[in-house]
Length: 467
Figure 1 (cartoon, helix red, strand yellow):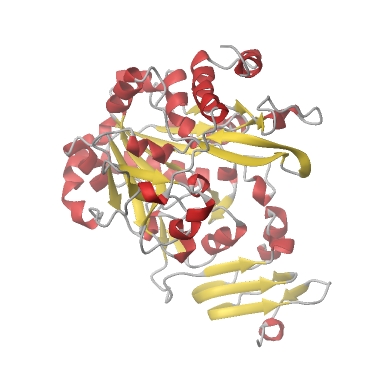
Figure 2 (tube, rainbow, N blue to C red):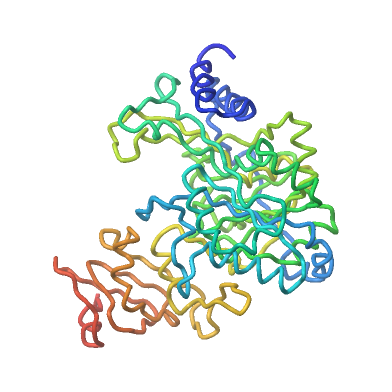
């Protein structure tokens, strides 16, 4: 490899990255070098109007039970939760009844094994920053070690590219910031180069259910597995009905040839953003829960010499996210759901919103901490039957609630009841030391610099905004 890429090749080789990882990054760098933006124009797309629903494929449960012994459960677990002030795997956060995301995931899989007498392997795709923390936490569950498959494999990393020069970004203050994750689309490269894909297939595993570790709604569903296996579908995406709250989430569409395609917000031209956010036109969004035929994936990777060629996502950011004056860089990423356009017979299934419960902010975390959700006997997170509102939109003042340490100290003593709350806004520094019940649309406001602590109903009433 010659020209501008040589400097990237040298850096990646010095870091010990594989030839496949280097070739994959080279294919995307070449696109950028030739002016590619990764943007997908609305004029090239048409909306998806109809899809099978989870309810409509309920008859495939028995086939799913038959295929269970051939299934892997893979959790994407590379996130540190830096936006919430974390420096460890976000999946280690406590989320319900003292259990972390990781605890609940492990208990769900172990319950499935017990219920169906099938040893379903659980595997985490970690990043180099989350692997050690995660494996240490998994030592609490020695019973997971019942197969010859490792509990994790590690996704790669790629160099950042200076936008002005297209040279590798250098930052002596913190050399780790010269690298970035290549997005969860790297799962296919990581499965292949780690040897995990071949090892799993050779051990008799045909299918994989892949989802985010911070989405506890994404639990194993036998009808989806049965549908995948019976119909010999190579790639199946779970999508949900899009609402105003999902306007910036990746939506499903069809390309000019009528094939299913996923467009992420970062792939949308500025002039098409209003169209992108038309949730009535593009009415299905990707939940990032996928069902994959591993044999079909291996065949496709073989045909393409290890590189699926997922659509490029070119993100422009400051090289040091904490220093806006640092050189601008391109971070080249791919999204795992965009592989739907690589498989000729890929399909999507419309699932209920209950299968999409991601935690990206402390706003999301508060809802799961509250009484709106409970764990059933199979460790599945369910909305409480006592809820009287379909959704609860939460807006916490980022000055006092954005970071997990600040959030925890303000709700450590008590968490408000949100069973009957439709929308909650908290402005200012407020802590909860007594249980209170919030109803419909409610705003709490403290304009003082000193923290206000809710220790009684009177304290609560004094903070309710009358506007």
